[in-house]
Image (cartoon, rainbow, N blue to C red; front, side):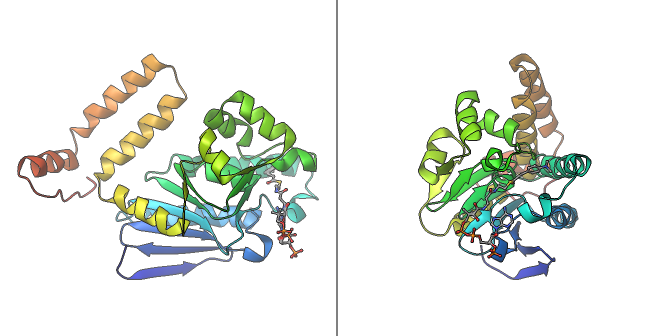
Length: 266
Ligand code: DAK
């Protein structure tokens, strides 16, 4: 990516726009980007801000500093929660993570160090996880006497299967980058700067028909939660929907005219 970058600072997050890509950086490096309630609320606000910009075609999410994506929910803040407050916190976090998961454009997690507990859950709510060679994943909550509360028991199981999810969750052990790639927790381990790799990937996605990418995301995510027959019916519906878009007309015309497509996202 090149061109001007606009940066917006939040209390716990940084948001930058560069051409069709929004870069969201969790920005509490001294606390290894641990997730406070305030940070999660700001993440929700950042999604509002991104949604207001139709030019954004993909999002990259990463952590500030070179040690962590996010080392989990903030243990200091969480320690004093009552059962009712813990449930509310979990429900709120789950809503924001679900919003990220179904966001209208793909979200790439660039995991540049520890992604533990809520940090691992946040990465798993993204479309694609790229891991640096130093990335370390894990759901260590049982070591603190709690269970994953932001979808970890469910998303990890769907990504790596029940047996592996059980073993990782019951032991709370760490999963290094190479293993994460092998078991399907990360899409790929990246040599060098993982944020650069994520931006490059985001750029490739951004060059495609935005409506088609968005509908493909919906088909994959919704289909993964239903039986094959219903999922195939949904795919057929969404395939048909593509033919009501200008992007489909432009994409196919560009192919036939042997020129690059100019997609509008309409
Ligand atoms: N919370 C708060 N501060 C944290 C933190 C965290 N999760 N992780 C690290 N920090 C802070 C450390 O306290 C330290 O602060 P200072 O002492 O400098 O003030 C600073 O970050 C640097 O950390 P270390 O000094 O510990 O650094 P090391 O390199 O030695 O170790 C580490 C890095 C990542 C291995 C270690 O910090 C660590 O084990 N951190 C905790 C990892 C962890 O257990 N994460 C899971 C948290 S539990 C729920 C919703 C969500 C969840 C559960 C329930 N509901 C609402 C019900 C999710 C829970 C979790 O995520």
